[in-house]
Amino acid sequence: MKAESPRHLLRNPSLLILLAAAAALAQIAMAAEPEQTPAAQDAAVHIVYVDRPEGADAEEFHIRTLAPVLGSEEKAKDAVLYHYKHAASGFSAKLTPAQVEDLKKQPCVLQVTPSQTYQLHGSEGGHAGTTRTMGLM
Image (cartoon, rainbow, N blue to C red; front, side, top):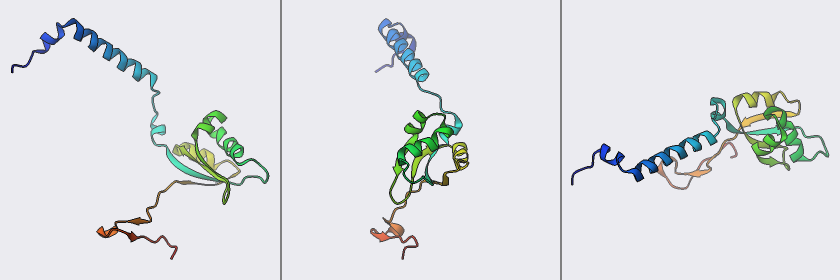
């Protein structure tokens, strides 16, 4: 079977309309997506431990702590992934390195640490079910 030449395809008005529409949709989609700055691409989830005043609502206090760093309470609400309220007071949020440094300057912030996931059971050394200890034993 002989392949059609590209010139032949471009003579087809329906195909030209379809290609033009696809190109226009691609431009609209690209314009609608906000460009991520290099700093936003470097954002990572961090756990922020705070010294919350007794009687203060945890979630409101966390938002008020993060808002000056992100520019508004609305942005802070959107950025918080989880509120820690019981054993410790704090929250997790996706933050850039610059935001982490700004947050550390807040007087109520005790510590900002990158979130880490540990696998307690795994196939270390190829043996299924091997248990890894993490200083607890």
